[in-house]
Image 1 (cartoon, rainbow, N blue to C red):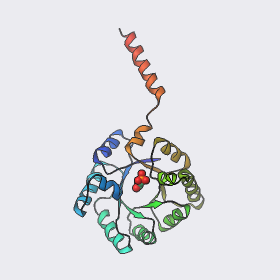
Image 2 (image 1 turned 180 degrees about the vertical axis):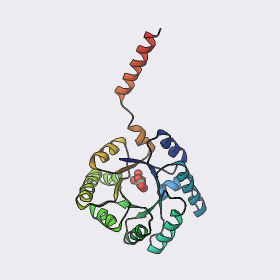
Image 3 (image 1 turned 90 degrees about the horizontal axis):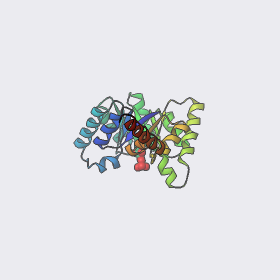
Image 4 (image 1 turned 180 degrees about the horizontal axis):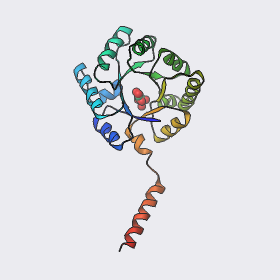
Length: 218
Ligand code: E4P
């Protein structure tokens, strides 16, 4: 399973990249706004800065909701760097845009996915990645992980090549469960990735090893 970090914060992206386990980055308009990035030129420059930091795919989301606008924005974004994946919302015009981008060699990430039916539509349109939002499904008391399992089964049965990118990850357990459910990629806040490292028995064990080493070397 690939690890993407879900942020537009350059420091966090650098920290994740330094771990040596990072496969890419996802952003969205809310994450860009959180970093205070606004205006077309600043947005494009920020995506370029992210691409320069990481090895893998970088999702950059379109703001338009009509086909022509999405195509115009997506083609602009794709020119920034080969790493750019154009993030397109799961709406009718978005499906048309995903098909256009697929036919023109531009990678896409179909975002705001909450059902298996939507997942089928995105795969049929030729999306590179599909982003089901686990945390937001859980927020309304449904089971986000069941959705990942269902999509994973459908894609395997049907031989769809779209990669399942588990998004809206809120904690380390979400990552473990998404891996179990068959996600190809997890996009997570840095805190959730780092949270995977934690175990009290590791801390206790390491403290004892170091204390014993100190005793024996006195
Ligand atoms: C990533 O592609 C999504 O935009 C993101 O994971 C959404 O996460 P949230 O539901 O925590 O905002």
